[in-house]
Amino acid sequence: MAWLKAHGRHAITQKQLYDALTRGRPLPPHPVLITFDDGYRNVLENAAPVLARLHMPATAYMITERISGPDPSFLTWRMLRALERGGVEVGSHTVTHRDLTSLSDAQALAELVKSKRTLERRLGHRVPWLAYPFGGEDPRIVAFARRAGYALAVTTHSGSDHTRTTCSDSTGTQSSTRPASPASPRSCAELDENKLVLG
Image 1 (spheres, helix red, strand yellow):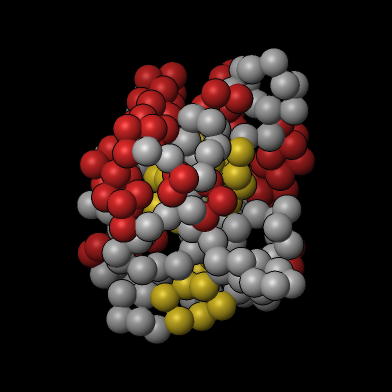
Image 2 (cartoon, rainbow, N blue to C red):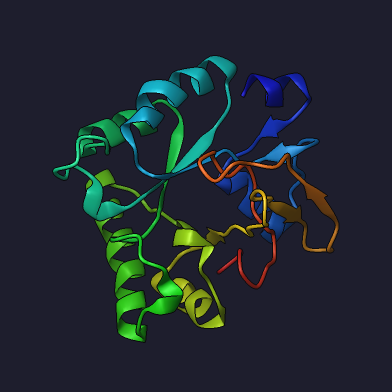
């Protein structure tokens, strides 16, 4: 995070990205999205204090069946609310973290709808952001994400040695982030209006 700050990168929120894509609102120079998948406790324990100190927003994409579940490495609902209070947005990462493209229509839609509804009911506000598990999406899954009510979704594109995520605005202008290891947070997403802006 200190590297991003020192090299002029500006962390933005999902809402800022959405407004830039749909309303043409300006973004700061060198914008990045800082995201964490799955809902591990170390986001609250390790990442959140650093983000707060550096005044950097981020998003945690949650696998809802793992929240307050038997595995102590995942966040509880109480911890998730604390994470939000500390400035980390919450998005959906589906109910069970299965590759949506491998599921039937009914199964894929249920993963998207149930996760969103559970988060909204337990947190008391809308949750319009989605990260596709394993980056798995296709036109069918994008249509289901729209139908489920998501406004913005993110994916990844893997390479042979690393994962590189690419940002492009609606005019097709592109910029790349530093390579990220598979275990590191996704720092920005492909801004393809077909895949990403779902409204």
